Image (cartoon, rainbow, N blue to C red; front, side, top):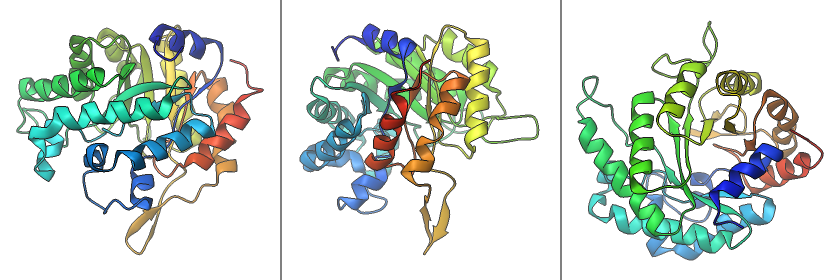
Length: 300
C-alpha cells in the first residue's frame, strides 16, 4: 500500500489524510543539542529518530517526513558535513521507512538551503540545483516514496528543488511555501500571492500544493488553501500549521497551543479544501493524535 504514490494521491482526494508533526523539538527532547545537525542522528542515533517517527505513526500519521530538512550539502556546510549529504539523506529515508513500515507513506524532506539565490544573493542557481538533486537522489535511494520541498519562502528556490526532485526520478513531488499576513492577504517573504505560487508549483511538476510554518493564524492558512483550490481545482492540497504563535521564554520560542485547540482547526481547513493536514513547529505526537481523532467524521 505505502509504496504507491498514486494511492496516496487518490486517498487524499477521498478523505483527509493525516501528516506528521514537528521533528526538531522532538529531537532536542531526545537529547540533540540546540543548533546541532539533526541529520547526523540518521547515522549516529537512528533508533532515536525511528522512535520519534514511529510515535507519529502510532498517533495516526499516514505520511511521515524524513529527518532531512537541513540535509542539502549547502545547508550541511554550516556543520562541516557537506561531503556527507548523500549518506545522511539516504540514512534519513531508511530510518523513516523503518518507522513507517506498511502503515504510512514516506516523503523525503527537503528544506531551504539557507541562503539567497543570485542576483539577490551570492548562490548560483545551478549550484543550488545540484545540491537539491544530490539530496533528492539520496532520499529516493533510501526508499522514500516521494519528495516534499517545504518551508520555502522563495518561490524560485522552491521551483529549483521541485525540478531537481523530478530529475532525480521522484514519482510524487510536493511543494510547500511559508506565508505571512499582509494588508492584501497572505504573501510569501518575496511578496508572492498563493494563486501565483500554485500556478508556478504546478508548472514545475508538483503533485501536492502545500503551505506550512510562517506567521499565519488559522484563517490565514484557510485563506491560502482556498486560493490554491480556486487556482487548481483538481490539486491535492497539504497544510501543516504551527501550534499557534510562539512566545519567548528564557530566550526560546515556546508553542502553547493545546492538541485539542490544534485539532479544532481540522474542520475549517478541510472545508477550505485541504486534503492532507499535519503540523509544523510546536506540534507533537499528541497534537497529531488529536488531529487524527478529529478527522474521522470529516468528509471532503
